[in-house]
Length: 118
Image (cartoon, rainbow, N blue to C red; front, top):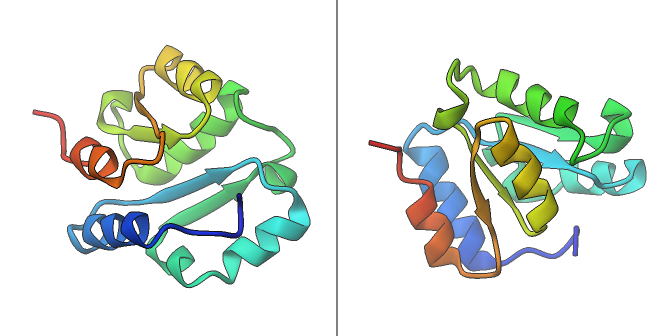
């Protein structure tokens, strides 16, 4: 799950990166997998990457989301989109005021959600 990637999702991330959106990875990957993820080619699209093994805190703990939100530079949590494949993680992020997408495998949903809010 952590080491495979969907080429369609990578294309969406490239488009978001090229548009200037800060992209922050927030993962509960254990330390050995975080090292693997840091070497993936798509990792360079991310402005920052935070891993629970390094933060010593896991999603859905609010502190994990705060690390990521601070890294975006956004003062308003409504300007941050949190994407996760787990609904409980999305629920925790929504509770903090972040916009969320419970990602279920549809890259077009991701592309649409990455459009800035009006």
